[in-house]
Length: 376
Image (cartoon, rainbow, N blue to C red; front, side, top):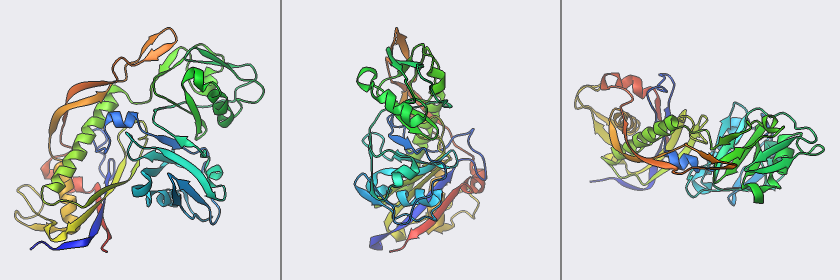
């Protein structure tokens, strides 16, 4: 008889791409495909290693985040966002060691709307109290203050910086946004640089301040995802789907919830370094697997609970997957001052090979951490 529990057990699984074994050159997993990454909603704060005040709270997509304390490290700040991810649809991570980054869990329909509820934590974090919608994120390089009279030409529109309105990323972004109706480009500060969002590629013409803004004149930008990284993301997404199928081969989970990803993942330019998710299981007595030939244990050994979840994940990463996929195409066509993608996706037969071999299963499982986070 199946032992059904109305309050399921929740197992949290973390896949680490590069530790203790580095599989970054072989492949990893990704809950999102390349088109979803291209459409992701993401924003990064401008304050390095921020310290919030006791009692600060934030409204994120109408849900309260916090209260924060003055002793919260950046990791704890991110975790306060992530415990609400299943409600907000937004996960937090740490960008470049000491900046808070927010990213929609569902890139195809997500949004990030922020406001202060108590105190001014958004100012402390360097996040804008505004809404962020879909649009390819384009990240500028190193920012240098623009001087009076310098120009930037975006999609054929000349923007002249006057006085001090280009001396910081925040001021420069505000100046760029006054031309939004002409350029179709929205700008926000991120870390110590500029992030652009646009539904189409962005073309920079010849301007005296282009390099100061972190871009190159006479160049079209469409995000950091190349054809190679898009293919790797598709392969990683196929393995993710394989993991779900492996788990569902023995039981039907009551829920999957993506908790967090780390790494430079907001634009799909690289594979996620870590992926953490939870699995809710009602029929807990069905959570067992019987070991197979080639696996570390004696054939026929039964593994339960945490060990069973880990084995189901690792088995999926030993398989080969092949199917037709719509892969992001980063080819940009430029005519005059107009930049566009003729075909943003190409249907391609994609094969995702195994990350390792069965004789190295114990090594592979060293990169998988499974814990029981709730037994309610």
